[in-house]
Length: 216
Image 1 (cartoon, helix red, strand yellow):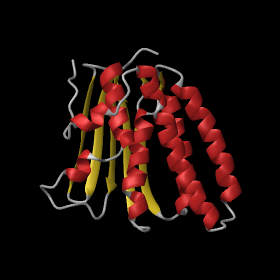
Image 2 (tube, rainbow, N blue to C red):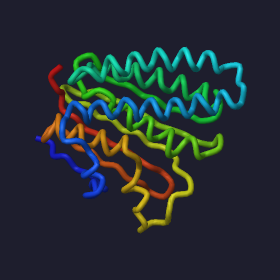
Image 3 (cartoon, one colour):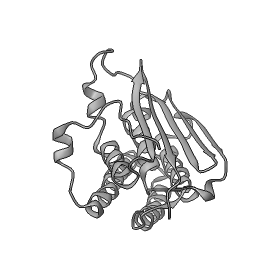
């Protein structure tokens, strides 16, 4: 059995803010996604971009998918990957087509693996919010998704400029509610069936997840 592992464990004050009811806890990922997206959309409208209408339509479609997926206990990995692809398309509109480099690799049969909804999505969103958006056009993101037998291997690696020097992990421990929520959801829904490691080396942040297949 895999054992859950957090390189930067949740602090008591963070855990105290989390709801006790799992269903309420799951629903908190929806407004986290929505607030971030609306902020991005607002920034686009301020620029009076010609792509604002396209972004609104894309956000509406993505939000519908997010709400639908989050009502389920588990969803096929293929469905979660579709959410990632749709979200990244929106980021290209919000940030500009050439504002970041993306290496997105998928291998294995993604139809046979089920995952808690929005977990992978939240890690990817975190890469943009705390990394790419602060890189001023020089950001990059590497996503690797591999399915081997009944196990998912996921990794997200990205540039995060301007973080504190080695030894100061204060920003790591406050990397955002979304990641804290995703960790807790894994702990409650996949106890003993996953291994999660998050951290940085220099200005590169990584999130690595190994997850045994979960029933739909």
